[in-house]
Image (cartoon, rainbow over all chains, first blue to last red; front, top):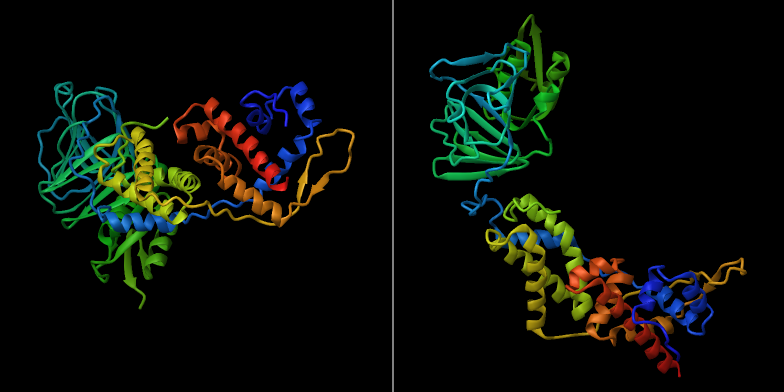
Length: 302
Length: 176
């Protein structure tokens, strides 16, 4: 058996990396056919089956930590980060010192540039207020309604709502009083949410929803909230808030007194076609609706 | 590359790490140590450990951790067996390697040949066998194997070359 190859020759042959001369010489050699047969026969060997799904299920059942979000994971706020956060809050009361105020009407959206270049897109029937003169040392806005934030690097940025506070690049998010519904979705960077003793760090793609003191986690694959593309999206949301959204988008009045409070809605509807929106909501919840001018009545169709 | 601000503690990241690494880790362990049930257990064990220590292990270190932890588990059980290789029986079309031949040649790979081949692969030194099977069966590139085995690409090429020489030698001796 003559082996006048270098010590990687056969490896290079397998990768088609031989020079023409090397290849021709090798192919006319006596052992070529043998190597070829070894390789061809090896191709008949099957991959070991590995059941990924059941392995992952086993792992998760053994850790049981997956329902609890990691607390205090020693992650420092990433100070250089830009963060994009959508905050959706139904506020019933709020109190503030008037400064710069931007308001949107039913069915209207607006974009607000803050003094440092951070951008805020305001959804329908919402308001945003901030103090321009103290901005550089105190980046705080007061929000009522829903907004999507794209925050520039800098000092701590806080969004105050009647239902609590969301802090980006900072340390706190306190839900001080929960007389409504709060939803925070993080699209980029990190956000800390603190509610009572619960502490949750949201990172890209995570959503937290607080309804009547109950915290729910979901995920989003989107890079911005649905309403920025003229849709409203819900995930297991009590119908009350779905109808408030409908009212805000279309300037209608919704009567849902016939429905059970616990009913929830998952899905999305367009913000620019009332008829389709009503059909989607009624169809997926098994409801009937009647429209009388700008008044809409939902009834259970049982 | 991997973003180091992402934490393995996040389920989404943990899951994608699992999807990316579990299958390769499993093949590596079963080819190197030969016992696929044990390999499966070790993969799961390593991921459980990773989750428990997720706060201390940055994402870019996670892969190394998985390989080290599972390899330690496998070596601690010390029950090295033969790699049970399954194969399909079929005729294989091969390129004759001669340009003047128009029709493709068919090589009939007999069952006896497959049995001696799988035995020869089993008889390879551990590292040669691992590299050879990862490349030929799992279709990993030399570079990917180098990362898995923590050696240079050149070292993987040498292992591949040696593995082939050795397989041929074992087969020749068996026939002779």
